[in-house]
Image (cartoon, rainbow, N blue to C red; front, side, top):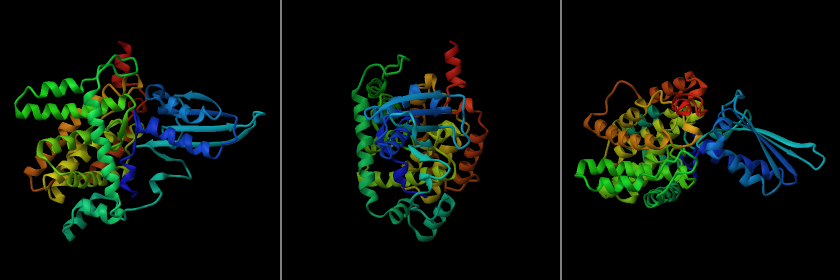
Amino acid sequence: MESIKQIYRIGHGPSSSHTMGPMRAARMFLERNRGAVRFNVTLYGSLAATGKGHMTDAAILEVLSPVAKTNITWEPKVFLPFHPNGILFQSFDESGEELDNWTIYSIGGGTLANETYNELTQGQVYEMHTIKEIQAWCEKTGHSYWEYVEQCEGPQIWDYLAEVWEVMQQAVHNGLEAEGILPGGLGIRRKASDYMIRAKGYGSSIKSRGMVYAYALAVSEENACGGKIVTAPTCGSCGVMPAVLYHLKESRDFRDSRILRALATAGLFGNVVRTNASVSGAEVGCQGEVGVACAMAAAAASQLFGGTPAQIEYAAEMGLEHHLGLTCDPVCGLVQIPCIERNAFAAARALDANTFSNFSDGKHRVSFDQVVEVMRQTGNDLPSLYKETSEGGLAKNMEQK
């Protein structure tokens, strides 16, 4: 497996696969085509179907258009075999002759790949790539999941995770302060600050849940506005982890050093999914985004509350299992409905999974790795209209109304 830095990418929303990935690809293509006088970029499948709502064209044009005239071609009905998020870059000289072309795919979480290049296989850091293996190692050696991360990544990982945690906290603060209408035309108002104010008027139990909602809304709304966030594991699911960790820091006074260890543990679980299945909504639906984020947050919470390796694995397993089959059907191709509310509910479910697992001894019948494989198979079986194309489900139903 690669570094957990690939799970936690710092950047701007609203979509890791539709915004961050294409922007990175455009920069890479530009580096080898500085002398071009014209670019053509063709977006295929899911990228074309929901690209306008996800600002895919804006991300690419921001990189290429200052250098040369750039044309975007949309092909929402054409799905290339490798992955639903295909991009063809072409460069031309003054006579109109093609200088270069490159087909690349944004496969989730800002990661790029094609038939000959795959960032998932670049720079392998972890020898073990299933939770079963890693959990057995933890139980045999007495170490924790986060200690395995440190052993594989080196002590420098803590500086990176400290930056990740800082950006997550700032996204919460920014989202709680901001008000107004989210961009895109749906007329959705930001709700985070309202939820925070209302939550403070309740007793401890409801107040606690309301604050979790507020924090998740804050970060997800920042993402929807193109604000600075951290993929965990994607932009569309970026509100879950910060909500859980920020809430536990505020309510339980956990030190930042312990938060960073929880981030390491969560990143390990997310990395296993990314390696053995997918975190791309265009490939496996929202189960790979919000479902994985819930699993990561559940593992992080269990780590903070002193869960054993078995209890942490159980919490993560529940977080993902109970999101199996979740479709990705964003209304108008925007990362707003149902994405923002899903982040809030997944954050609450992650805390429930932690509580449930910590009441147990960690023993259970269905393993995390089994659920990852089921998620992969389920994602393969989902029709494309439920995988970030906005052609079915809520997107289609609301379009008709």
